[in-house]
Structures are given as structure tokens and as C-alpha cells.
Length: 570
Image (cartoon, rainbow, N blue to C red; front, top):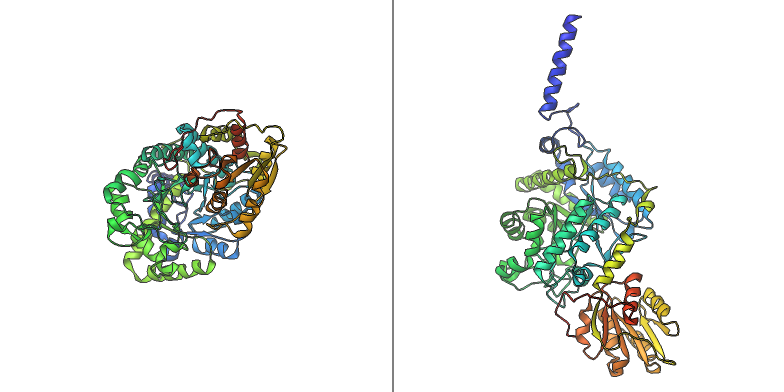
């Protein structure tokens, strides 16, 4: 009996020693939620992983439908999927997407190491807000830049982050750190804070800090910079002709600030810089940009993930999606994003798995990335005794509570006040505008909210809905719809927001003084219409943005926003 007690004490002492050494495993397989220190656990888990389990961590996948697809569940349960991307197509309501995210995270806990997934979306604010259905819609980044208050950027990041956390989304593909230097950079437009690198750096860092306070993993994009590109990398491979000095002082300035502030993730861009590299290889596939510049020169230690690998910008050389994914990993990315097609996801898996078995360099790259991914997940999801005040993300959201948490408390009032601070009068010819008795007024737009808010302000006005066009030029029916009506009116209040709406507006130049423009999204198109004498930039396309724009037009308040770009002459 005495010997048994001694044996028990020895075993207890031995177990305590193991715990003190960070080896508190109760089985031969380490688990994500074990009590070991992060560094020890990263080493233990990655050492125990099979090739398939390592590879699964570097995949970031989208899916179709408003419930988890069989393909995505297969990747989660059988392949240790690292990340999940949520799109607008996946959302029918906030409780639904929250429930789906919970279901998929629960599936991640059936795997051997119980590693939760990154769940990401594009919730930049303003124009790019992939999860709506009741979530807050901010004025957007260009509005923040026009307002000129960095604390507004901080609160934008914080409130957006709080709402994402309530849904179970733990990573945001934001802030956008692109510098809006090229007026033809349609892919950036209102998504950029400014054309001034310092202002972009300050506002991007503030937004980042707000996201971090909410416990969300922020992702700076699109590295090394999309703001001087005159093509959209969804359809083309943009080429930016600048030298390395300009790149460092201009494009990379916001990244230097954000990295100093603790930026945990960066998205690489499908953009070529031939004057720097001497070739047309996109930065996504460039070891020079991802290793020499980002890791070694800028000192970035977080994770690097690709933009969508199904975009044409990364496939222009003729590579398949799978081949491009392999090149992306070898270039220094930690995760590859394949957003849309299950067949492409499967083909990439098969090709990369073969490389894991046969290519030592590729295997080492994937193992290093898996370790970096795991370290960030441990920091995000587990309590750190050394940093007790750091937020810990609850990865299993509550679908029953999400509608009580969204919008975030104080968020609607803040976002409205913030977008009002950003509204900018570009040309004040007829402000305040109050129709004379009997004056005939037409309000024309392809936004129903614009027409509704206009009618509230000017009840006697007529409305003209212009069908939405994604083309760069309006078609004949759209043009004649407007030009046929305008001559009958004394004043036309026109919503300008796109190339196609600009094409219609240019046909009205003969109408001169009777045209009043409220510009949604980027006001860059106003540089093509110097004859417009009354123009207000609201930067957004929400009901609140249009309500505020009409309030300015009517003279209810005088906005103090200043254009953060110099493309447009007053």
C-alpha cells in the first residue's frame, strides 16, 4: 500500500514536470486546444501531420449556395482545410450564415488535431461589403479619407470587426492599402483612402487597430499595390511602370506602417512591375516581392495569402489554376485562395499533393507555411496568459444571438455621422437648391434608394429609373430613355457612379446649367464633365449616403469634406 502511494506521487511529479515543460498531452496526438505553449504546440502538431494534413492548412476555399456544400465539407473533414471564404452568394440572412459557419467549424473539430479554420470575407466597408442582410454599411474608405479623421477609420474597423465576430467570421480582407494614384484604377476607386501615401498609411493603420481590438485578423491588400493599375486583375494582368524607389516610398509606405503596427496577414496581388523585375510575372508568383521585399526588406513575419487564383491576372501565362497555385506557394505565399470552382479546387489539391510526395523544396515550403498559419490561429483562438488583455475569438458563433449583436451598438449613428463628414462639394453652382414654383424637376438614377430619397426631398419631382449596366458604355435604350425625357424638364438631378452612367451624362452636356450631379462611389468621372456646375460627392451607394447628399443639396448643412485625390478640377 505504501509502495503504491509512492508510485502515485512519482507519477504525479512526473506529470507536473511534463506540464511545466509544455508537454501536457494526454495522448500521442497533440491537439490544438492542449495547454502547451504556442511554440511547443506548433512544433508538435506540424511534426505529427501527414502530407495531406499539412497541405490542407494552406488551402483557402470558397463554396456555392446558402448551405455548406458537400465539396467544402469533404475538404474540412477529410483534408484539414485551413481557410473558408464567405461571399454574398452564401448569405440569405444573418442567422443562416452564422449557423452555416458554426456547422463548418464544428466539422473542423472532428479532425485529428481539431484545428479551427480561418473564416474570411471582404468587408472593407462601403462599396465592397460582401455580407449585408442587416450588417452596417459604412461610407467607405474614400469617404473616410475625405472626412480626414483617422479615428473614424479606427471605429470603422472596430464596428465592422464586432459584427463579423458575431457571425463567426474571424478574418477580414481589409484594410485596403492601395494608393489611389491613377484615375483609371477602377478596381480601387472608392476602396482607397487617398492618393497620399502618408494618409493611406495613417488611415490603414487606424482601421487595422480597430479590427484588432474587435479580435479580427486584418489582411492588408493588394501587395505591393494596385492603385496605379489601369486594368482590373480579375480580367487582365495589369502592369505598373514604376521604379523600385517609387515603389518603396509610395506603394510600400502604408505596408511599412501597418507592419510596424502588427499587421498579421497580407494578400498578394496579380500585378506585374516589369520596370523593377524585368519580366511580366505577377507579384503573386514573384519570390522577389514576397521574400526579398516583403519578408527581408520590410520584415513581415505574418501570413501571406493570394488573391483568388481563378482570376485571369494570374493565369495569363497559360498556367492552369493548379499550376499557378504551386508557383504561388514556391514564391512565398502561405495560402492559396480558390474561390469558385470545385473542379479547380480538386485539381489543385491533386497536383499539390503529388508535389508534397515528390518535391522536397515544395514540401518544406508547405510545412513552413502550415507552422506560420497554426501560430496565427493559436494566437487568435486561444487565451494567452502572457497577454491577458488580448481579445480571444469565439470560433463557434451563436445563430440565435446574431441579430441582437448586429448592427453593433452605436454603429448606425457613427457610420451616418462619418459619411456626413466625408461628403464633399466639388462644384457649388446651385447649392442650396430649392426649386422655384412650377419648376419641372427630374431625378434620374439606377439606384432605387437614390430616387426614393430624392422624392422625399423634392416631392413634386418626377423619377426616372435607369436599368443598371455593368458595361463601360451605355446601350442605345438606356441613352434614349434619358435623353428623350430631359428636354421636358428645367432641372435634372443625376446620379453619376460608373462609366456607363458617365456615357449617358455626356449626352446631356448641351443641357448645361440644368444638370445637378450627385456622385456615388468615386467622383473621378466628374473630370470628364467640366460643364457640370453643381456636383456633390457622397462616395457611397447606400440609402444613408443618398439621404445625406440630398440634405447637402438642399442646404440643410455645409459639409467639410475635402477630396483626397486631385484628379478633378472644381
